[in-house]
Amino acid sequence: MPQAADEWINKGGTDPELTTNEAVTLPPSQPEAPEDKQQGKKYPHRISFDMASAQYKRLKYAAFDSDRSMNEILREAAEEWMKARDY
Image 1 (spheres, one colour):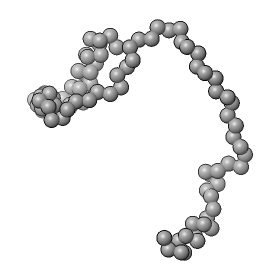
Image 2: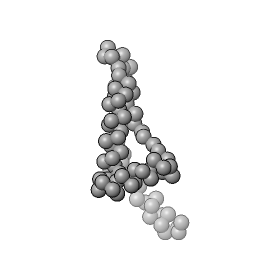
Image 3: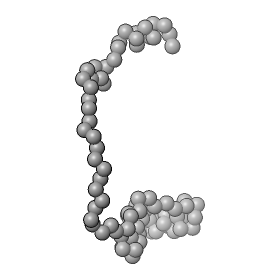
Image 4: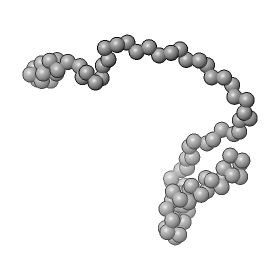
């Protein structure tokens, strides 16, 4: 880094919006109480598939053939899969 740029950065100091002059104290956190509700199945947050598989090629063809996006088809299939498994 050139010396002039280094001096300019050092003279600038700290951005006042990024620092506070007073110490911030947070109240102590309390552990969460166990819920009395009956918990259902854990929601699947990720769905993955192999893009080189025949299944992906069928999905691309279905999207092309039906003028629906691949996302629409996947969303519908995921909803049906979850309903079949009581999610």
